[in-house]
Length: 248
Ligand code: SF4
Ligand code: F3S
Ligand code: FES
Image (tube, rainbow, N blue to C red):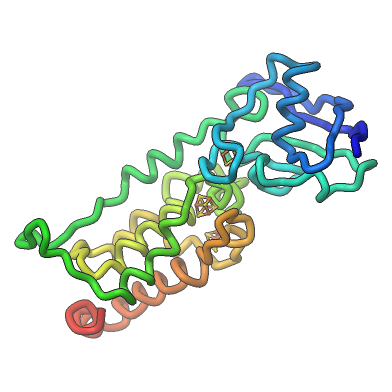
């Protein structure tokens, strides 16, 4: 079944912009990204949109659909009533480049600030061993497709540009937690998580977890355990040392 649907799409650039109305054909089984492509093909050839895989795996097509952060390629048109106006806007937490494309370099800068995996210096190639339960603990975090929807949603930075320098955001606090939980990583990540990456600014509202297209339990499995580890250490550094040496 085909129908004509109403869309409002934000058009503009670094100098500003506004919402424009379009009527576009929708066919059965289509997703929001299909409609954006049809809009480009038929009415707005200069509409800027970033996408790549159309399969929910590259993390490129992040935007806000009716105010909710989503992957456009994974948002079915059947989610909306045929007479509902669907509004598509760029991610709000990042500067607009043009139309639906934002500058997400904040995230790459945050990624670079994290000390990389640091195995013990005396461990040679082929000597890396870890228990299955340690593998499983952090495996969930490796499903991240770097769509940055969680970064865009977190209220700490969403409307507070001034917090950005002090806050890595959920995706990168999760990366720190992943490395902290890695039994072969010997870097001390707890103090820096708090002092340099802003772990304390997270008040576990879980909005990041709600929008994650990979269903990663960012708050429960990464941020809260990381907060617990930081608290343990602040409470008693000897307990922390014992945990590090004997219980991991
Ligand atoms: Fe996207 Fe989830 Fe990764 Fe955040 S943790 S960047 S929401 S896949
Ligand atoms: Fe932000 Fe997620 Fe914490 S939304 S406040 S990082 S739980
Ligand atoms: Fe790759 Fe949507 S186009 S995740």
